[in-house]
Amino acid sequence: MTTSKKTNNGAELNLVTTNDINDHYAAAHEKEDVSDWFVKCLLNLGIDQVFGLPGAAIEPLYNGLGRAKREMPIGPSIITVKHEAAAAFAAEGYYKATGKIALCCATAGPGTTNLITGLASAKLERVPMLVVTGQTKLEDFSRGVIQDSSRDGISTVSLLNEVCNYSSMVTHPSQLIHKLHAALSIAMGPNPGPVHLSVPLDIFRMPLHNLSTPFPAFNIFKAGLAPVESIMPDQLFVEALSTFNRFTEAATVVIGTQCADAIDEIIELANTLNWNIIATPNAKGLIDHQLECFKGTVGLGGHALAYKTLDSTKGPILILGTPFDEVTTGGWDTSQLPPHRVIQIDPSPLNLQTFLPAKVRCTANVKNFVLRLKSALYEKYEIKSPQQLQLRESLRPSYIDQRHWDSFETQDIQSHCIKPQKFMWKLNELAGKDTAICTDTSGPYMWAMHMWQSKPHKRVSTPNNFYLSMALSTMGWALGASVGVAQGLKSHDDFNPVICITGDGSYLMSSQEIGTAVQQGLNIAFFVLNNASYGIVEHCQVIVGAEQIAFKLPDVNYADFGKGFGIPSFRIQSIEDLEKAWDVFVETPGPVLFDVIIDADEMPPFGHRLESLGFANKN
Image (tube, rainbow, N blue to C red; front, side, top):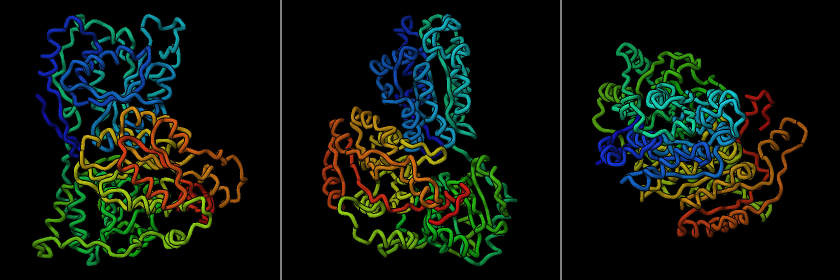
């Protein structure tokens, strides 16, 4: 028997009920240990996806997971990554694709320290995940034990406290339920993020019949996963509505990720009332870029037209569900946002902490606000039904900078490489409507942000299908994250394969995760943009007149690298190469690698980043 619950972003989860689990284990109760009990808790809470690496100190938990997988009708799904940081990257991608929290496991010592970068990324992205790391036996503390991770060793609880919202060691089995409850409540609370429990070997191995704590009656959905239903106070709504009444000109809406469940209503309003919509980077995948009302993205790698649209807007400016950080604003430039016309609505109070002068600022559910606004404005203008959606007809979207398009249309000067913007545009044509894309930082992010034409799907928990992680901007993130995204979406038969776009520098940091995709049979297209350099570093040095140093990479045939994993791999030097290789990919189960030789002289649109670093922008 299973039950269904929904998370904040609408993800429907099938949960194994408490009775199912207790009935199954009743006969074997005397043989259980604490790890079995812990796994029961996780399954009851809907946490059934595991990313991690086994090791001596975490072995009891893996035993519990293995027994549950073998014996339970609906057991956990366990994916072994090739580096612990990728476990956190995969858990981040999994959550962004499904809205479900995953378990991230690592052994003591280096297994835990390897997690740090991945957890730091998740913390800055506000992505919840449960992290359980191994710990040496309590009786071995202060004895110089191998991989001592207690306060007498490297104190992994303290280390992870800086990159998690909660970090604690379990020193008695009766603490486990209380610390698990505290951790998950924090993970899914107003400030979501990773939470960490360090569990010693002897705690997990303790026989369950010695444990007096009963099986928990709570579940995580009651502890913090219930949908946010905060309603905007009437007084503030009246003030926001008066802003619309004060201006007769069309409004502009800036959308963030918290608009996911309201995007249909936002598009309807914009299309019916002739408003403009602008996306922030993380929300790029929420909206069909073919819509006439869409004017591009703001922020790092965004479009000049988006800023011109803001600058020319004479009506209200609605800012919905987005933080105002460097990536979102392109260097904190808010000069196009006159305070008397700005209305900022966000369900997270954290997103309102950044100073942004506005007429109205309120913590509230975005969809509730949009529905109230729609009702009021439709009544005011006597609108009975929405207008039919208007799609653009021109090949080149007006928001793509002309200089990049001009370069795109020219022939490649050198026959052995392809222009990155031409590659991105053609890949966009080849990919299906529901294709998800994970992009790494630096050049791949810039080109994907500027050229990719999102075509959102409606068949999973969130319509977003453009995944990035720019808060920490970790090179190699996309290779691990694409594993999590593909794992989360693979149960949807009508969902196309996942595309991972990475650079050669990032690939050299995380290439081992292709092995994870191979083992799991995940349909991921790995595209390595190969310019034999740390491209952004090189371009920055040229622009600012710095020393030309330390940016070169070796000339590597990454197609041969991919063949070493036993997967189809192709070297792409032209559009024709790409088309032929893509045909093979769509007919081949499992991952495929594309080594894309790009024109190293093409400079991505990253001028805002130079300005925020204090360099003169000559781009």
